Image (tube, rainbow, N blue to C red):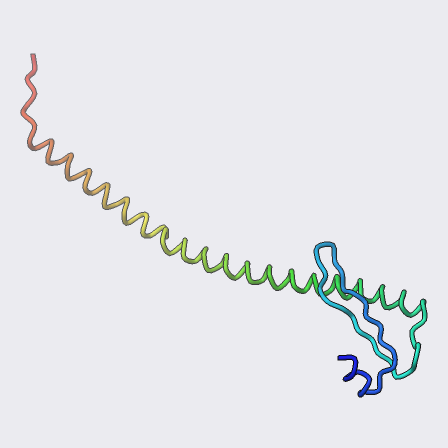
Length: 117
């Protein structure tokens, strides 16, 4: 890799890690065609840039994960609503009520008359 960078004319390279609280995301790489191009102030500045970039990358990744979870939840909610739709529940309930009423009517017709004393 160093040979490719030198062949491209780079004389100096500054690599700063992209670090978040949880992990290292990669590196911020800055090159120059000048020898010893980066001062301590440059490195400090690039470190601050890398920290901000790491936060932005982590936020973008979190946003994407949240969007995917939101889509998945919407799909599961739709499936749940279709499975337990009010019309289906009412249809089951009314069928149960009709069966109960039919049983009640049959029992009334079948039972022996009650004697009064």
